Image (cartoon, rainbow, N blue to C red; front, side):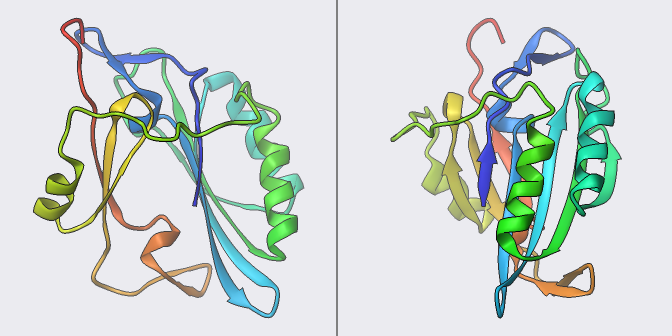
Length: 178
């Protein structure tokens, strides 16, 4: 999986609670090998309202299937929209097509992951309690992925939980100002 940081998106919930991009706004691209030079990609991307049309058009122009277009949190301000998409075929072509769509947004590229992002949370304990795997992202956000028990099919292909179909539980540290 590849996380695409949307530090250019600034949003908050009612009460002035700042939402860290690493918790709910970042995009994620998942790739699974199908063998014989083929892969399936499943993606989810947060967008500014002005980016939605150009992003969806770029996906379609690059042969990528749009699966869903909706809001994850209806009360974000400003509003952030999410597009879920998939591609099946040559992984390099799929990656290039996805990059073409990302380039129509204000997403800062290239990106760099912090070596050891700090968090005030015991991410191992959170993962143990929820029965999943934890990752620490930017701003100290801990995301625990809990795999689904049943087999999931996407575009007619049996996929692994790591293709973005696990249940994600995110913990964002809040400062005294939210």
